[in-house]
Image (cartoon, rainbow, N blue to C red):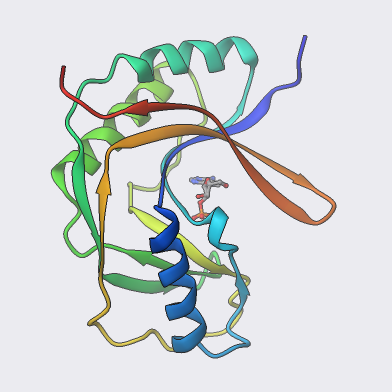
Length: 177
Ligand code: 2AM
């Protein structure tokens, strides 16, 4: 039997938005703010599942595949720092209804399947930096990236040789048909 995997459902960003964000980050945060997340690893977690067996993964994927809802537009125009978890994040001042609906559905399905449940309410964010041990000056409002969201995916997270690697295992298109 294969080992359980650390899994999460997430949204990816288009390549050009990833690149724009890392350039903005380099230009707007002090170099010693924390450990920057690589462009390809920037993502927005919809539901964190914890360690999941292959059998449960199949069940969760089947449920995710039955979700029917249209895509939505996400505007990344907010940023902040969580001192306790030592991260600087990028988020949105107006979470679109479609984003909340999708995350709520995936989180409810995960809870019904007995997966790990985050005790924290859903706060949509993209982690930009980790290990931000001190308060970091957050750039003034005015930045904005509009991202059309047309799909979501199931990802595994593996840590080896000092690096975290995310692998997309499956993806689903958002449409209400
Ligand atoms: P973070 O970026 O805020 O740390 C893969 O690790 C993804 O799952 C990351 O987006 C991470 O969020 C999220 N994640 C990891 N552990 C989590 C937990 N205990 N609760 C909620 N999300 C978690």
